[in-house]
Length: 245
Image (cartoon, rainbow, N blue to C red; front, side, top):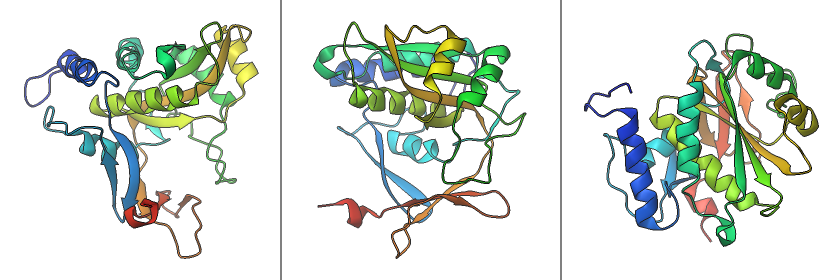
């Protein structure tokens, strides 16, 4: 794989995350995004995690949000990178250890183009129809639940989705977690039997292009994200003090 400035390749980084998951006995990456203050985000972890390849897990969580929806479509993420992200996800904690989640990878230009119209982009921006051609995701991971093994695995969906997003950021990619998509149409396009699998969550991934800025929630409590005339995407975040009981 491509080596970074410290001479470590992608396989080294994936191996390190796998070992962290085994050592913790639960997740391949315990970091989750939390509240934010102006210009930055904060993260928390179940345990102190040493720096890895020059970036600790707090840094990765800070970098995860600014790469949200617009990406460079021609710089494709590829099947192998998507597989490595799923390999991280399979090591995460699972309700009753059911490990009921399955993953459909979408990486060819043809399938990506067919899946794109199924997605509801940025509901708070009615005048924005989503990324333009050339700035659309170059790959997707559809998180499904094997109904023979369980159902309603919302917690598992969140754990695996965040883990894969952090893994994507470490590889230089970014993306968006999406629950608003036409499931029946997506299942038809991707050949997923809905009697056997529920389509729970979708990760849209690619090389980041969009600039996202986290700002404090306004005094009126409005949490809707918005864009300025330069198409900078602003995401209001509650302060740390606001979320502590």
